[in-house]
Length: 260
Figure 1 (cartoon, rainbow, N blue to C red):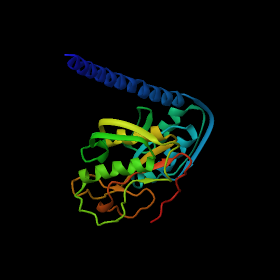
Figure 2 (figure 1 turned 180 degrees about the horizontal axis):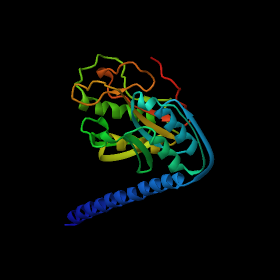
Figure 3 (figure 1 turned 135 degrees about the vertical axis):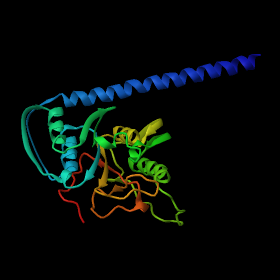
């Protein structure tokens, strides 16, 4: 009888702990959202932006305004439009939104503390790998580069047919400058899409953006998903290297022109 009561008590205690943990996650996201909104509400006296592409413009503003960004963009003639503009006495949000408005068909939203810019038509596109849901992803005090690579390995078989790799073969895909971020990341998510996981990783790492690049008229993967492209090269994307994304620290500037 005593053992049975102890067991029941343990179960009740475990349930309470789990509920407490879940409740604690809500203020974290609320705090991150509030912090981002507060930064977007700041009035900038004088600001000038010069860039050669959408990605370069957004990452420069992320660094200047100290805002984590998630950038999903299609590299084409429209997003290669040069920006050379100045603002006086403008809110950070209005500056970012006016830049996004230069590129037709793109949306800018703040989601769980990350400023996300993406093609409107991709938001609910089942062929967009960022909309793929992962049943569970955990990272405990892990460097961003390692966590990103594990996520890439989880997504890979979901978007393309994977042949067994030979022993000691290299693994292409996600790209992180150095080990990435200011600090090791701790993330615990269930039933989250890839976009949400990438955002959680850059928030946990600190001072980092995530970037997913698509090429104009790129083919789909063997399972019908839009192929991602190398941010630093205009070479055609390879199905073998899918998926590709970049986790870019604020301190690193994108080049004006990528190599061919």
